[in-house]
Length: 397
Image 1 (cartoon, rainbow, N blue to C red):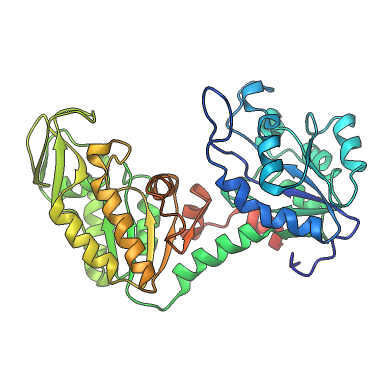
Image 2 (image 1 turned 180 degrees about the vertical axis):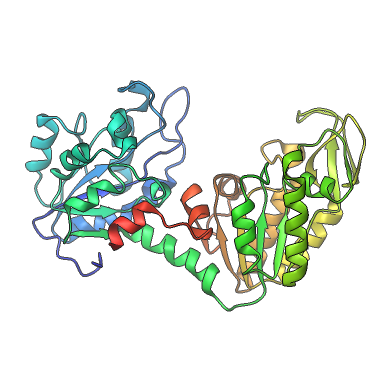
């Protein structure tokens, strides 16, 4: 497999698949969080400094009917130029003669951004003819979009076959894989995973895989109430997946058999409606009254989790402890973030992955206080689960 550090980009056009699916202000359409652009910058700038030119390809949002002005990448060209410190040209579309002419005429040090690749239905279909047209924009293909590596799309997977001897990962994907492998393969102990979010059903596979790796598994968020009900607790109107009560029991038993400390919250902040200004109180998590719902973990749980996390050597965090978007129900999530920062300062390696966890870390301004914040989301989870990612396989094969 080729290494971006040693590859000779001189005089070549690098077709780089980036993930510029960035949040934007609903009114102005301006980029509100440029994390993904900044994290892709080292790869782009490396190619330019090595004497090459760059053609960027990405998606933005989920267009349903072809071209949509609000989802055009033209709206982030100027912001990308500012981040990179070099002018970025706009291709107008992806596969027209005009776009191909622009990429063909690129000089070393120049950057061209094509429009939203998902304006073409052939992208998500993994269409080979479309991928071949995209391949005409480059002499070398670089995949640096870990966030879409679990999709077998034309620009993330199929296009690689047209560069049999000139394909590689960018710096971002390399660092993502390295960070996840560090959690999966390290012998440092104790390893603690914090898995939150709304539903057990979406986390079953990752929880079962983690049971073979971790010393501590902290369960939080809405999914905790399914575990509580599975063990006979009263959960009131809290979110519960009744179809997964038996699954929760199996996970509890597996953890016990494997010697894993499965920590389920012991108290919870409940509300009489799903609203930041709702009436609220703290109760034992297995004694929630009817008409009340758990929206955050309680103070005793916070203290217990802090002790576990702060004494860990490896930490993986995926999913919040409560409805942190509401100020009155963010204490649990904030306390987990605080504890991870403390553990990291003490020498632990901390990996934050999954959209809501990343959003929480950014909300509390802790992105630079932890070891690594993954851009992957679904891709990171599938990689943790042991699933072969199409975008990764396409480069390795």
